[in-house]
Length: 247
Image (cartoon, rainbow, N blue to C red; front, side, top):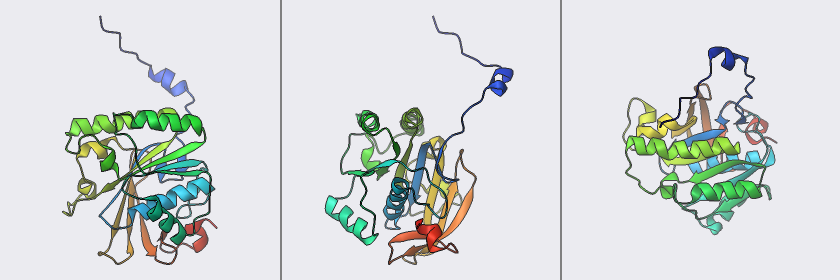
C-alpha cells in the first residue's frame, strides 16, 4: 500500500521560519548546483580556479563578498604540473584550504560518496568544482530525464551538505538565440541547476566578454569582463583591482 502524500497547509508554510539559502558568492553562486559554461579555451578553468581561491581565502569575486571555507577542485583533464603552473601564473596564496584531485569516480558510481566522505573529513567544505563535468558522467549521451535525474542527485547531496557543486561545461559552436541552449548536453542540465554562469568572448581571443548569470536562486545579470593576462584572471570591467582581486 502506498504511503499518503505528505502535505503542509499555507498557514503552516507561512508560519515557518526558513533559513535563507546560503550564498557562497553574493548574488552569483548559491548553495546547490551551479553550472559554469563557455566555449573551449575561453578561460573557464581560470575563472573556476579563481573562484575557488577567493572562497578558500575569503577574498571577493568581482567585488562581491564570499563565504570563506574549504574548496575541492576536481581537475579531471589536468596534471599537477599544469595546475602548479596555473597557480604560479595567478600568484595564488599557498593555502591548506584549497584541495585538488586529478581523478574521481563517476556520478552514480561512487562520486557522491567520495564528496560526502571528503566533507566529513573537511566540515568547512563550501565548494566542489568538477572540471570538466563530462569526464565525471557515465553516459555522455543521456536523455533529458536522465540528465535531470543526474543533477538532481548531486543537488540533493549539495543541499544536504550545505555546499555548492560547480560543474564546468563546454558550449556548442552553434549559436542559438537563447544562450542557455548552447550549453553542451541537453536541457535537463539547465532545468536542474540552481545557478548558471555563461562566459563568452566578444570574439575569439579578444580577452573581453560577458559573464551572464541566471538561475532560480539568483537574479539575472550580465557582467562585462576582461581577461588580465598578467594576473591570469577574469576581471569585471570598470571595477578596481581591489574589487576584482579582493586585496
